[in-house]
Length: 86
Image 1 (cartoon, rainbow, N blue to C red):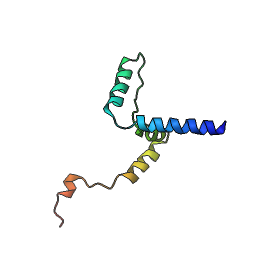
Image 2 (cartoon, rainbow, N blue to C red):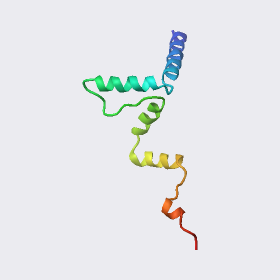
Image 3 (cartoon, rainbow, N blue to C red):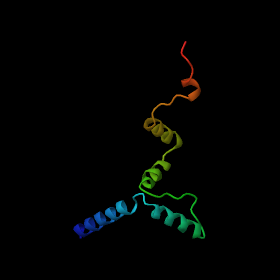
Image 4 (cartoon, rainbow, N blue to C red):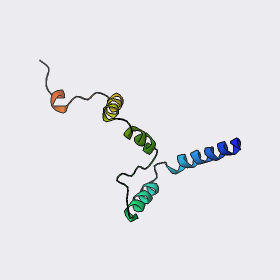
């Protein structure tokens, strides 16, 4: 019983990984499905990022902002970067 579940789950994971790669057809099919639906979702998550994004949206705004700031390198505004230093 447990072995069957693990095998089926592994197959499911493999299917998800191979079907969610960035292929234009997956994106187009998702958009067409939403456009044709009677009650479209407010947001459509496509690809492997959908799991990360769905998890991040559950966090409070300050936590999301903190994580994004950790992932993005510090940036200097163009107006400041162009000034000669005195």
